[in-house]
Amino acid sequence: MNLYEAIFVRKSVRNYTNEALSAQMLEDILVQFDEIKGLFGGIETELAIFDNREGQYRMLSMLGIKAPYYLVLYSEEKDKALMNAGYLLEQLSLYLCTRGLGSCFVGNPFLKKKYVHRENKRVMAVLAFGKAKGPCTRKPAEAKRLTLAEMCVYKETPRQWMKQLLDAARMAPSSMNSQPWRFVVFDNRIHIFSKKHASDRLGRWDELNFGIMFSHMMVMAEELWLDVDLIRLDELSQKNFPNNQYVLSAILRP
Ligand SMILES: Cc1cc2nc3c(=O)[nH]c(=O)nc-3n(C[C@H](O)[C@H](O)[C@H](O)COP(=O)(O)O)c2cc1C
Image (cartoon, rainbow, N blue to C red; front, side, top):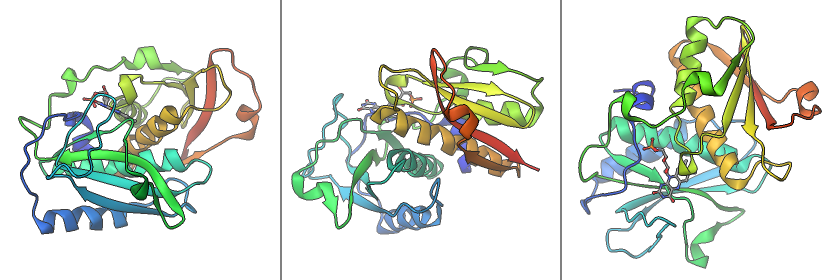
């Protein structure tokens, strides 16, 4: 299984055995992280693996995910740092799936103060992981997701590769399975919107969620050998949409 295949079968795993992972496996995860390019560049990040087999980190999320290990992503606090964090960590979640391990994002990690910062960086996102009690994959049809028809407005008839990009995006996990993304699809570009909140900015969760969704899109683009740029278009940024907020556009480079 590769990352692309993992997009369609991964699921959030909430029950783990307390089994130790080999030093080689932990090393492989760190090497994999080093190979992933950030979403926009210019944001320094660092990955730490917390071994929680003795329960020393007690990072219980809102819904209480107790896991033997956590991936803790530290990042400089810059614009789009959360989006970048979601983008990086979801690729690791897919990687863990290819290695037969389960994982789940931890929404509200409670970390002791001494773990919150590392030099100029702070914790942006946490992924629980380890050997799953039970399977760490499922059939694509078992994922509870909106249909593409519910998420997309097509301005032109989409070609096969465009449908594949959207399908990968559709499978992305999101906090409380909120799936906040909406897509306006042209022949070679997708304008990406978020369902609107009271405030003008994306919430903390949504920034992470969108980073996660972009990682699925970019993994799929790589699989299809497509060059896709994620950029923010000025003309859309300045428009006011009643129910949606503009996030970015995915533009296919010829
Ligand atoms: C940013 C983020 C935070 C999440 N936080 C939690 C959490 O605190 N507890 C939990 O049980 N699941 C959490 N999840 C998992 C989602 O509930 C899950 O991804 C979603 O319901 C879709 O299910 P699936 O991942 O199995 O496809 C989180 C997911 C994301 C993306």
